[in-house]
Every structure is written in C-alpha cells, then in structure tokens.
Image 1 (cartoon, rainbow, N blue to C red):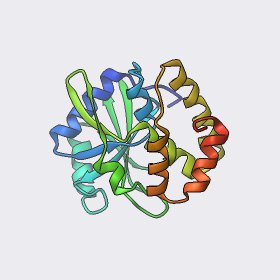
Image 2 (spheres, helix red, strand yellow):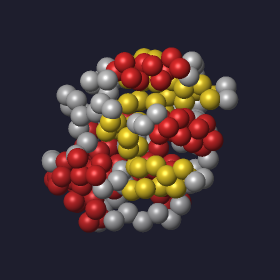
Image 3 (cartoon, rainbow, N blue to C red):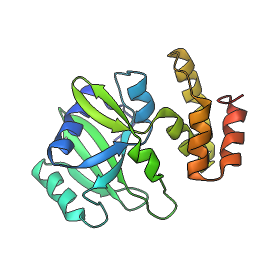
Image 4 (tube, rainbow, N blue to C red):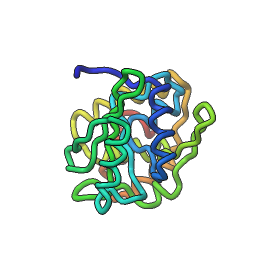
Amino acid sequence: MGWYLVSLKAFIEVIRKLLDEGIKFTIIGDTVILLNTKSEDVGEDIDIFVESPSILENENFYEEIVEKNNWLYGHTWLNTPRITAIINNEEVNLDLYDNLYDFYIPESFIKNAQRIDINGLRIRAINIEQYLVLKSYSGKEEDMLKLKEILVILKRNKIKIDENKIVEAARELGEESTIIRRLKEIGYLR
C-alpha cells in the first residue's frame, strides 16, 4: 500500500456517498485540522464517529455498502469497521468509530460539532480545540509529536486557538489537569 495522502476531491466523493446512504457521522481525526486549514489533501485516513446507524449493531449495513461499491472491508485496531473506498484509482480509508473500550468521544463534542462547507458539501467535524484535547488525552508519544506538528501548521495558517474551549473540552473529557499540562508544555496554552 505505502504512505499516501487522500485528495480533497476523493474525500468529497466518498463522504457524499456515505451521506447518500443515510449515515450520520462526525469527522474526528487529523482530517479536522486539514479541513480547517483548507488543505488540498485530508490525511492518510479519515476517522469518523458514526452516530447512526450503529456500527456495532448494524455491521451488515456497512458490509452491504462496501459490496455495492466494490470497496474493501476490514477492521480498525478497535475491531470497528474500516472501509477502503476506491475513488478514481485512489484509496480512501475510512475508520468508523463508536464509544468502545478505551475509545471515548464525549457526546457534547458530537452534539456541538462545527459544520464545514467544502465545495457545497456540508459535513460535521469536531472543533480544533476538541481535537487537540483528544490527542493530548491519549498521551502517546506519537500523538504528542503530532500535536507539535499541528501547532506549526496552525501558526502558519494563522488559526487562533480558543484557550477557553480547550479548558472546557478537557473538563468534559476528564483528566483536565493532565491534558492542560501537556498542551501547555507543547505551547498551545499560556
């Protein structure tokens, strides 16, 4: 397979197909940053928090979509569905998530998701501050390095971070002091 980035064009096409199938979801991964910086690529894969139909109770529904479109079906590290959509000879990996085991997205993050318009396609994504809190919460070295890279991207794109939104999101997720300390060390907070 190799490392590659998904083009915005392929992303729009596959997201439109999911919406046409009646799937209700919110973008939660690195794509949040790339959409907010108006990047022409949206990362290596697309992390999606599925609201309905449930990926845990309706896996057959997602398998049927894959079959209908001649895509590939697999599983994420959490054993939730991973769809590899083939769009114009481009692979788009969609990792579908729900609150399961140690993976948790507060309901308020989903309920208050921002709406982003991309070439006439309106999608929902958590806000940047919520994304930063989720990355910081994990505490994994790779996530801390990613947060440092993202800080550079946000500064380059002159995107301001709302410290109050970070504190609020950290409070909602729990482990507020740890999250705040990590984000201060990286340079997100004063």
